[in-house]
Image (tube, rainbow, N blue to C red; front, side, top):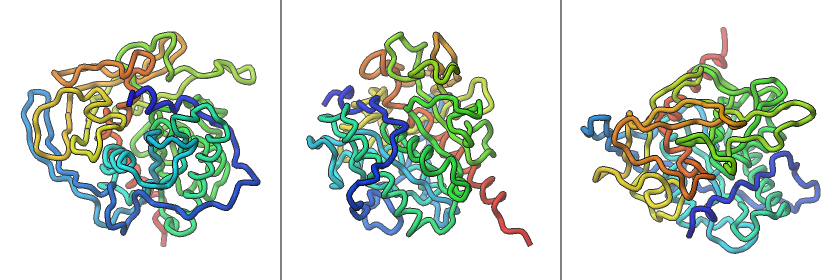
Amino acid sequence: MPITCLLFSIFCVTGLTSCSNSPAAAATVWLCRPGLAHDPCTASLETTVVNGTGSKRVADYEPASHPAIDCFYVYPLISLQTTPNATLRIDPQETAIAELEASPFSRVCRVFAPMYQQVTLSSVSSQQAQQVAYDSVLAAWRDYLAHYNDGRGVVLIGHSEGADELDQLISGQIDNDASVRRLLVSAILTGANLTVGANGTGPFSKISACRSASQTGCVVAYNAFFQPPPSDALFGRPDPTVLNGIAQQEVCTNPAALAGGTGTLVSAYRVQLPTQEVAGSTTDGILEYYPAVSTPWIQFDDQYSASCVKSDGANVLIVTQIHDGSLLTAVPDSAWGLHVDDPNLALGNLVDLVRSEAAAYISAHRPTA
């Protein structure tokens, strides 16, 4: 299955609102949730760590025993079903992507990941199908708040279509609701086209981009490329370029250097998956060549560096090879850049960031005597 099809989430519908006459929501089917018998978000985290010289060590990372915060993860477009919207059936693709993108966050949070009626390849341009997908995510979010949150801080995590759904969720349900906004530790929205918002730091009116590891209630968003995006790039440039007379600019927050400048990425990939037909896997991503390892995960501590770069109307995360890691090539072509690998290129940085933000959030919300 061509990766171009698997990731056709460029048809983002940011700004649509939930249909008032939608049918009653189905009960949430949880892909990941504390207490599930077979939870891919708590899969083994045993990792072979490779440094710049090629030396290896094994790190047996473990899920946190009593994490203080939650994570709410929405996966990208990966379903191979052929109906306009996917059913809530858990297929190998959903299990694999949860292991690949979400399971490492179990080191710092309880991970909740709902199945949702995502848009499938047969209807990527259908606004009706897009609305069904968002309504499905919204119903799961409301279920989570009503039955599982219990006032805990929460990190929203999404990639590609998942990030687009969470963009809508934040805009419609969180940004202007102080009681819910108080719960937001941060949002990690990779591979979505988010622009600077009314507050000048974007992308929402009250929720701005994260600029330090101790800042909470903020957003990390970026689109990764290994060279300045071509004129036909699908990500990194605002559309429209001008809105209400104001020039728009994409949000880019470097997870390795939130305050700006260049930082070293900690890249992590799960190499043992139930199927490789998912974005960012060893067959549908840049990780084509890697050292032989026996562990489910491989981590590269200093293979790549990154910085946010503005070029020809784009604002993107430029990733540069430091050592002899996998060659940085666009998948499936230059218009996509490193989109399929957005989360995993910086997965170690993102987990560390959530750990720091969680500590800051708990400190700020600790009851005073």
